[in-house]
Image (cartoon, rainbow, N blue to C red; front, side, top):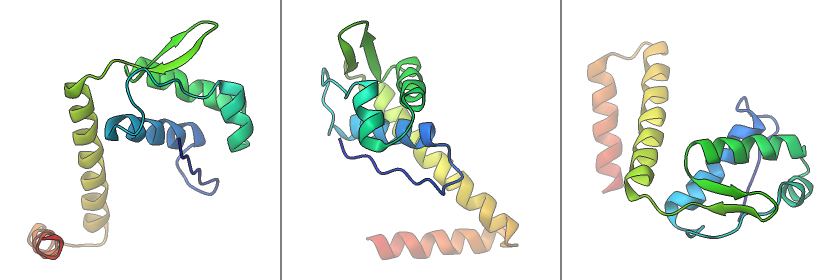
Length: 125
C-alpha cells in the first residue's frame, strides 16, 4: 500500500488516509481479504498518530470497505461492485462540483464552463 500524506493540505490527515485506502480498494490494488497494516505499524510508517489511523480505519469500516476482527486485524471487505461504483461516481461528482464552484467564484458563466469542459474532453480523446 502506497500512501502519501500532505501535512500542508487543508484536508485532514485521516481523510487523506481514508480516501487513499478507498482508492486502493476500488482500483483493485487492495484485493478482497487483504490485510491492512496494523494501526501501530501504519502510524509508525507514516509518522502520524495511531489515533489518526484508527479514525481512518473506523471510517472505512463504517462505509463498508473494511472489516476489523478484534485481535486479528483489519481486512478488505468482500467486493461490492455497486458500492465501488457508487464510490467512484461520488468521487467524480465531488471533484466536478468543486471545479464548478471554483469557476463560478471566478465569474465564469455556464456557457463558458461548458466550453471549457468541451475543450478538455476533446483534448483527452
